[in-house]
Image (cartoon, rainbow, N blue to C red; front, side, top):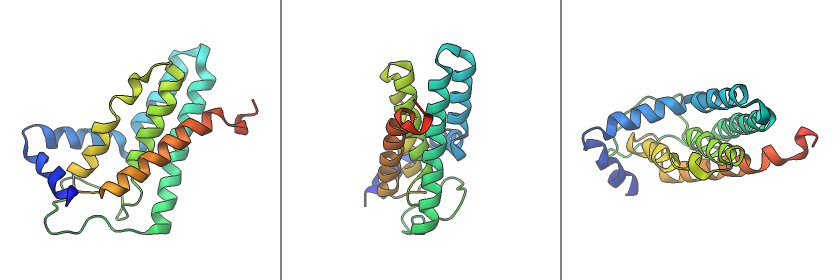
Length: 161
């Protein structure tokens, strides 16, 4: 099982602590929302872009939360999987952490004109597997939702442009 193999890395010194820190940053998309608002405040020439990108982060998180309540897939229950961190709820599909993280990476990198914002995405998403709180498909679908919303929403006609 892929999840069991990935989770075996949690025993490497510092990995579990790092996964918990990354997971905490992604809770309710809070760190990404703060980053987007800070971008809007500190970069007034691109304020509108930052706010649209931040709206994409919020929207991707919201879509994931709604889908969780519709699908109602329980978090991993295999006895070989240890839950090593807290969760906001009992439903796992799709990963809202992965959705908001991917949306932030895609939308913020478009604002910045650099792909640097995409660099932390894999580590942040793997952290959910390391902690035993998501199946790989939860993370992959969450990331796909976030990437799609992060790409589409800031450019859409929703903003009247």
